[in-house]
Image (tube, rainbow, N blue to C red; front, side):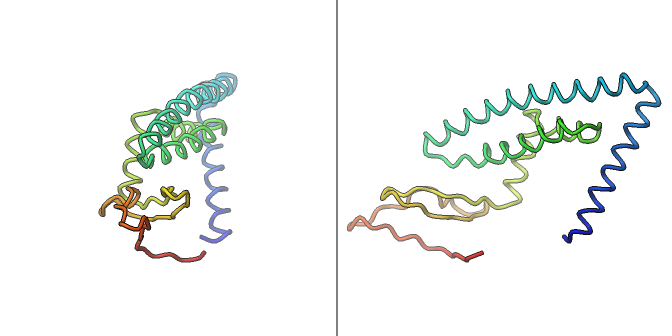
Length: 163
């Protein structure tokens, strides 16, 4: 996606946001519209802190159990995006931001992202090194520790590329 397309997308979205704000203000008045945008920003900040803490706790619990916290990592990114959208003034960004901050919709969207996409991650090995893995949900979980061989060395098959 080139710079021109991104610029026109952002410009078009901002224009749409201003038109929606103006339409709402013409129906309920500018003072109430401004108060509504400030209240949604404050409510979004509260939700972001609360949901972020819960997600952080779940992420730590999964890591302590030795599981890959893919769901929690995707939800964390969604929380950041939702918090940023709620701080941005406008009703369209507020609707998307609340959808990303509310636990039910966020978890459903995170599951869809994980099912459709690929997860990438770093895992630690018992020798103290790191290994980089990329997998889709169809195959077995490569983040599980492979069985140890008699000599203590671990062989991991895979592909790599330098970007």
